Picture (cartoon, rainbow, N blue to C red):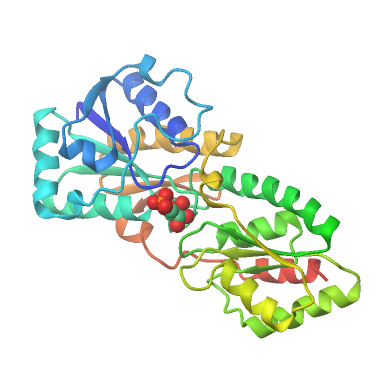
Length: 322
Ligand code: F6P
């Protein structure tokens, strides 16, 4: 392998730039040519590929977003799109691809590698933390901290007005962001997909909390097309018309901003790990960190939908929110 292409794909996540930097610099350090591919798989299909030097990645470690831009490519989901992507890879002499992205992006890499027998290496880049086989994903820690800062502010107004706030956070189908931000913020409850929350239970719980000493209450709700924060707020309004209920959907502000030291270090370690993996002849694995060790996770495992969720976190929140 002489030339490595690097791209970011799917939703941007803070720390992706640190990962691009790490792949580029470690690759150059080990004697590879590096090519930056813009706009994810779309850029591979549309030939948006540039030679990268160490200067291309100077001064970016502290930036959120991704200098390579990103996209959720529809065309790459078709055999014709993947053929075009492969042809462009060959045209540029790219023998290995490093894809920084989440579940959908690594699923794409898996299919591509099976179809064309190319070397693809994944880096876990998503705020959702929903990739199996790695303790954390690049962007997750930053987003957790961003949510915490936002909810701390919401707490000020919730307490001043004695209101119940339903705060909706990202996570797609996973409750890692919701559960852990709830613990970090001292929220009264979290509603997550990993735990079935009956709205009556929630109402009873809130009544208990409010009856005791609390006059305000914060419930973190994991995003969901049908049962998001608005849904729960409506139900509680109906059952407790005396309560002053508000909803705050944090939205995309959760994905922006300067990456934390944790995410920069994770991105740097896994980026260097990607180049090491290529040199060792690894193919079609995601580079993760488990128990502080670099691990190679086959794509088929990384994209599994059953990443273990520590149910003890639910008890921690319950016991501390009395
Ligand atoms: O996967 C990252 C994520 O931020 C999810 O938490 C969220 O559901 C989704 O992306 C939002 O995607 P978009 O930016 O395309 O609206």
